[in-house]
Image 1 (cartoon, rainbow, N blue to C red):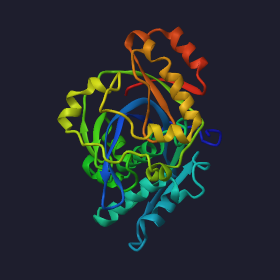
Image 2: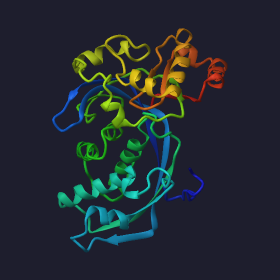
Image 3: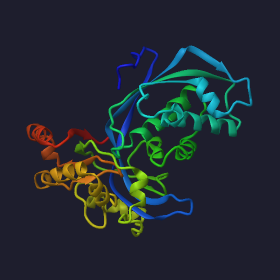
Image 4: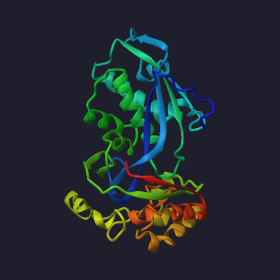
Length: 320
């Protein structure tokens, strides 16, 4: 999806928009607002999309019309390249939504600068959509972080997390920028220090609608909540292996609806004894992964063989 992207210039700001893994994922109940409370540990990866930000034609727009909405401003201020195939309308794109949410907060808090640079944002897409790797959410968070700096909005990290939660449940972790225990809808974040890790990641060509998953009658929605202290102290039960009570509540539902995901997961499960780890699904998407013991990760020949024999695209990725 990079063929129409302009070459980054010397003045371009380039940022990795990282993927994430859910080392486990529990739903602890449904909220009054219709969302679900969850518990998970997010792991950020050293692999993802890239976003290139540059001032478009050195244009600076004076904000002279106080009646302009954040949506109107966003149309004036953003040129988005490389995301045409993701949504039919730019207003549905998470990059656009992120910029719009920033501007809306600035308008509401009466902190909108008198001038803003018109931005060209080029997306170099590597993460598959619907994989549960957080690609769109990461793009949104990366956009917020960079525009907050370039536009000199000066919102704090806490403010950006609050704004980002209005864009999507997985966006706050990418604002937070480090491995974390997540609760609520994903916006209540507590940092966790985990050992460095490499993973064999498979991305089958499959997608199951998120609304379908949450409405599925077999989805577990009432997992007993664990304390933050428990999750912090029991990381050995979900980092390399996955021991009860830790699991991903979406696994059985997704594999029943998407044969390609079941095939990929079964393939990784066949490698568990050699990898000294437990294969699992991330998020509610199609990607599956297998943590690699350090002795296995350094055996390049073996890992290359596993990727070559996999039923779908495979990658070796590391923790960020």
